[in-house]
Amino acid sequence: MLSRVAENLYWMTRYMERAENTARLINATSQVLLDLPRGASFGWDVLIQVVGLDELFREHYSAYDEISVMRFLISDARNPSSILSCIHNARENSRTLREILPRTAWERINALYLFINANATLAIERARRYDILEGVIERRQSVVGLLADCMSHDVGFQFIRIGRFLERADMTTRIVDINAAVLAPRQQVPDDPAMALLWMGVLKSLNAYQMYRRHASVHVRSGEVVNFLLKDEYFPRTVRYCLDELEACVSELPHNGPPLKLLRTAQRRVAGMRVDGLTPAQRHEYLDAVQADLARVHAEIAAEYFYFHEQDSAARQIAATG
Image (cartoon, rainbow, N blue to C red; front, side, top):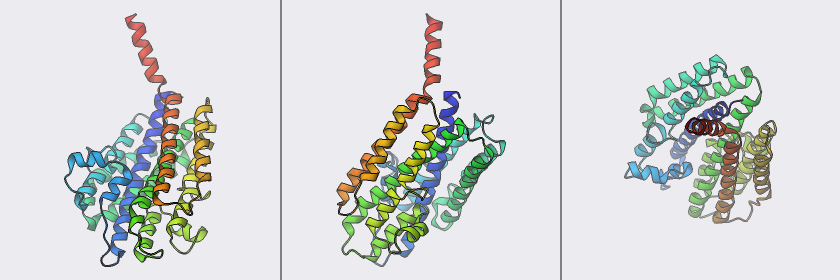
């Protein structure tokens, strides 16, 4: 497979996964706000911290109010990770892959872009936001299902899955990390109802609440939530599950030694993490290390599989001038 095609498949999926995860995060947070007890406060800057774009946000906005944060995360073209930007970039990547992807996949990605392009500014308002973002989630999931059902599970499909699970693992660590760091200092008693609601929002942002209650606990407690989202081997949005799937995908590729080695380092780090008794600062250090592991995996995959077309182009230029 051409390295350019592999790279476009990878980024197409990462952008779409990022758009869905952001939509889930916004909707879950908006729902939690409706349930907070009187006197409880919430800072919209938490969402900006989750996606790691504080510096870019401050370049364009003066305050972390709801409207500014929603505009930045949903419709601002100056933010390359806004929902609109991600879906636009996924569409542009898929445009070059129409001979690789099933035709209906391109049609659905294009329809998703047309939907968010028409509704992104409307989603800034709280009254319309939930339904529009649910529309993004449903349309994106239909693309995932179509690709799984109607595309050959060859090397190209492995790059699609690699992009999905790398992005998903990264977002899960960010959501758990920032909530551990921001929410824990506010805890006054172990069973504070406000804390339970906020950690419930963490689970719902990953669509994990029902499975958490089924497999972990009927009570929502910070340590059990963190342990489930990091280590459960069966739920598709936990860090462990994503790393296991990444290992399976990369194992199908040629020349996979270096990325597999890095993946197994990340797997050992997650498996060795002991959640009980950790302070929020210690938890942050662990999760920051996992995020660094994922960044190294991405860099190694890019170096091994994506840069050949750039090297070929440079070689041709040298040959032409020589």
